[in-house]
Amino acid sequence: MGTEDLTPRQYALLVAIAQNEGLSQTDLVQRTGIDRSTLADVIRRMLKKGLVQRRRTREDARAYAVKLTELGRRSLQACEPLARRVDQRILTALPNQEQRERFIADLLTIVSALGSMETTMIAEAPKGKRKT
Figure: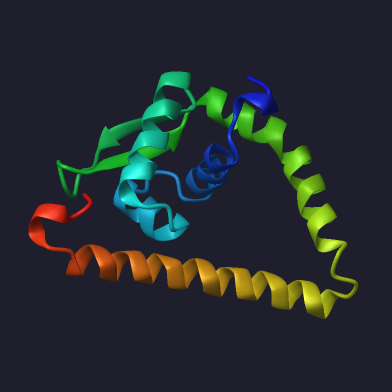
C-alpha cells in the first residue's frame, strides 16, 4: 500500500493509533477531535484495507479497542517522509522557531476547542437529533 492509498485523515488516525495502541474508538474521538460518526466510518474503511484491527475492550464489552496491523505499520512508515516534507513546507512560511512553536500551540488550542464544542453540541442536542 503506497502513500497515494491513504487519505490525510486516515494517516492522522494511523499516527494517533500508533501513539496510543489499544485505545477505544471513543478515546480516539477525544484525542483526534474527529467526530464519532466520521471516525467510525474511517475506521471501517481502514478495517477493510487491513490497516487496523479492533477488538472489544475488557472494561466495556460495547467498546472497541483499535490497533495497527503489520500492513498499517508499514503504510504509516511509507507515508512519514511525505508527511515530514509537507510539515516542513508549511513551517518554512514561519521564519523563526518562536513563530513555529506559537503556530503549533495555536493549532492545538483550536483542535481542543473544536472537540469541546462538538461534545457540548452533542450533549445539548434534542434526544431525537443526537449524533452517536
